[in-house]
Length: 294
Length: 261
Image 1 (tube, rainbow over the protein chains, first blue to last red):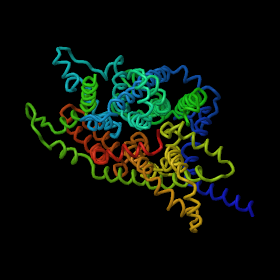
Image 2 (image 1 turned 135 degrees about the vertical axis):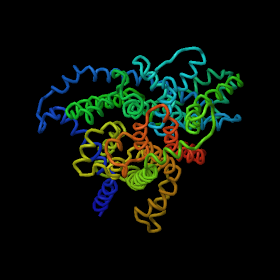
Image 3 (image 1 turned 45 degrees about the horizontal axis):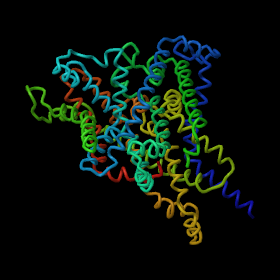
Image 4 (image 1 turned 45 degrees about the vertical axis):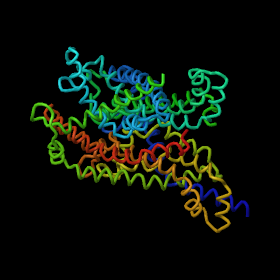
């Protein structure tokens, strides 16, 4: 009887999982396996069917100038966006987490970039950055500085995109920090105030450590974002000039849909998958899990 | 000190808002005359130049189609993970975790392949399919379900509710803030989705707003056309901004009560 009941529970649980599991397998698990498999084959317009080539794809990838550039760019893009947007998110949350006139309006201003699509954000900033007509250049003209083509110059293009992405993302982290700040017991802050702690001390000794789980969570989101969002490149730069703003996913996109080099696309995808797994592992083993799940 | 904080808050807010004011200014500015005068010509021209009505409809179908299926799949899976014991629970939980680690967006190459093999290229269903499950939503909801007192489930059982009825009458109503938070996140994420629909569609009858906007801008990228592109950009963001301004309070408070901390 008890055994029968347990069987019934098992069947029911798996039935509950079935609808989501089908899509999980079809669009996440199966493609991961297939990509790893395909990365060992040559498959492009010159091959009728995939030919097994061992590690050749990986070797060619390492020698590919464009891939190396995309890899290095993506590294700097991650470094430029992750800590800045998370820290700015924390700062914004602290600023609007008080009842003064206008904070609700400020909150709206900080959060609306999150709500709008990246593509439209990209168009908005394109208008900002463009030479001659662009607003930044009009400002520079007023100051007597000549034209600056921020997106057309390989030394400034990545920074220009990083600035835009920080603007787009910071408000998202602000919301999580706001939620965390409101969960900090008031008594704790009052007690430390009575003990004579300055605001500055209070922040570093009490608030900042209590915000740690939120910081970790935000860093994880910001990290995946740094690899998965390239809408802005399609609109603003097409990876240019001279691949100066090419990122890994854009490289995969171009390999697949412009050059039809599927072996290359699969191999580059494997590289990104490995990066994501390494990041997840660092996060899993490198952080105190007690903080994380308490 | 207080004053400095206040002023810097306002300054930052203005800085953040500038791009929005910029695009509104460009969309309403009459390019034919010197100086600034308000016109809605840009909007009319954009609306007539591309099938925006059809883009709107497509976006609506895609966004709400995904949301309805998601609500169904995440509720069942979240309940199973929160309140049921079954063989393989730990392993299958890890499989769901993979989707958090490796977002679907990274798998454009193999997934576009799968869609082609299924014969679904250039359909709205192809845009929706990969998003019918959200591991993020499942974890969010599982957390909320776990916080609901088990006695309530037992009481429902005593009243003769079966499992599905218990979920419907006990868990779903009590998890309302989480559903709202997830729904808003899902809607804005899907409304914004670009790369996947760009890859997987080839006709205006299936393109969502974001892809339509990019296609439209491509055909009109001279400086004189910018007012029109700005107007088209506003078409894409206006419903989202309106919804956000109207429901801002609810949006932020759902976030805070949804268990994401």
